[in-house]
Image (tube, rainbow, N blue to C red; front, side, top):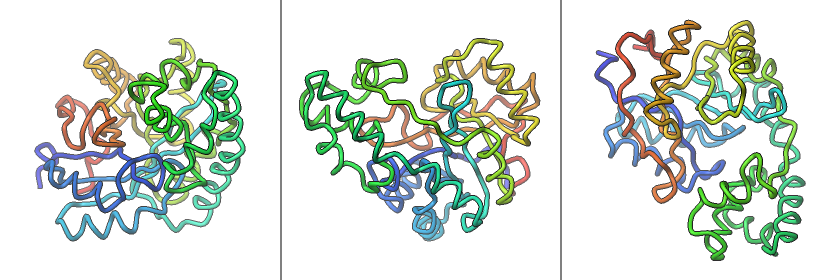
Length: 281
């Protein structure tokens, strides 16, 4: 099997976290879009992996277990994708449970902030959008605000109200970087920094993040992902070369209507980078 010619998508979401499609439906969409190797990476939750793996087998796709873990580093949220781990590892499962704890209380505080900004009832409105109430998130609030007519689309909600530096955002203390990488490695998996272009760090902070991640045993960085511009993809390809990171590729697909990139539609990785899947086949 020639890994260079495969269509590989290692980052997407289902209704188990903040995606709009059930795990089996995400699998079907990935297959319809020509994906050969696929990972479902719901936020802080592995509950959709069994359904996803089953449908992937039916469709003839290779499947990798995945998760996207929320981390607080230098006061901001960073996401670490775990791949090819044991989803029944008790330390990982318990760590994810603790990471999810507190989302409900945070959601109520977001609702209060939005009410104070002239958008009442947002918490109650967001709840039906959350397939898993434990994982109610800003995306669910954004979908409600669009439905209620406060904003034209989800991205506008984040730009105006719910982004990290916007007035409706309520910060949370997530897992530490050491915890997240440790859980993934302890379960036999690979740790990858998700969409680094989204993080508002200084060059010095980025250097410290990458150094610490490598020291902890992290191995990869997403180069081609739905939220990266072509310029950002080139930049993080250079970062991968400089630090010796394995390169990953994932659409970060959430919904047919909301996502910037559909499953399997990303360009190929630069040929000189070693992909995170280099020894999978």
